[in-house]
Length: 181
Image (tube, rainbow, N blue to C red; front, side):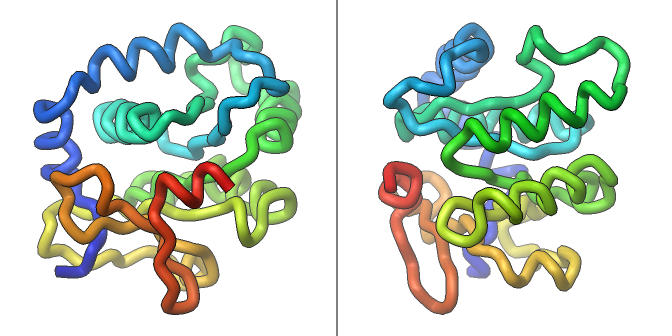
């Protein structure tokens, strides 16, 4: 098994825990202060990946972290503008960790690539990771070459929360430990 996280397995995980309450908690707590003791994660994503995004939010919330996504931010303008970019830069700086939800749509997105570049400048290398999402568990990941320089979030057994890890330079760190450091 490649260890990459698939859409189908994320969907299955949703039924194995109380993910909907975790998603609701994340949505309702999006205005949390940047000075909170809780670890915060900026989750870069493509808006068209909402179902996958909700599953990943629930997974991260289950690990005890605050997840920032821009569509939950009342401070974001309704129409994309220069202020949108300023607000995103501010939130990337405020959050301790940066994760790119690396779906095919996100990799093709100019905004996700811009966020990754900015996150790279502020979070490289200990506090940034990509989470490749494949179609099926047996699928490989066909992401762009530049994504190979980042730590990658994978899982040994998709259905077991404690088996998620961050891999970088041949070393594995439990995702829960990586999020807390």
